Image 1 (tube, rainbow, N blue to C red):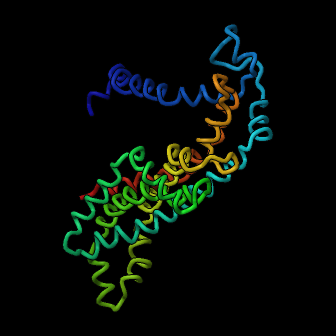
Image 2 (image 1 turned 180 degrees about the vertical axis):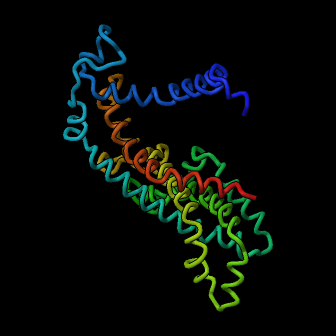
Image 3 (image 1 turned 90 degrees about the vertical axis):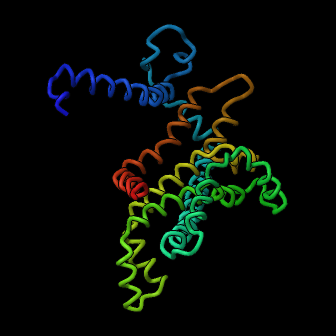
Length: 280
């Protein structure tokens, strides 16, 4: 790292690329915040500074909360995301433990097949899933989303937990077996406590995907009171060729805050979980 010792080289090789990266990454969020606080007169005017708010207003937030079913959309999103995340984590823990720790014949092929299932695009699966959801009588209900989201959450969470379970020494499990512990006791009292970073990492991933999912929510739900935030904001705040930009950006801002807060609290566990998943 001697090439970073001089200040000019450090500026050129480190600070300038980092500043460009941060600008490209954060500018859309800044624009979203500015637009959500701009009155309609500023949004539609070509005069003034487009990158700043001259007369801030919360009218868009009032319209979003009191004139639209946004609180119901937020509640639906929270319920669907939380239930789908915990369901997927439970199934992924059992699958990953069985594949990595029981060492049965064909376990590696099974793990690879599970990961390849994650690579199947949801845009291909939603057509047959729509037929199943309709036949089960779950169309236009929260259960339609709760039961279909694990189809793309479980494969990746299983693959992630497989990598983390692989990093836990086998000697701990063998000692517990010698002492008379059952597989269930080993999983609950030894494996899961050691795999907390991996569980948090998989949980954050599953929750984020569930929160932002659009195709299934658009296909399986039609009533306004059952929609989630991504679908409700797009379908209810766009009337033909009229885009309510202030309310749209306010909805996007409020919808992104829970995920941002969750990442800020668990970012260390998330990074350590991802690191454990790629260990050999």
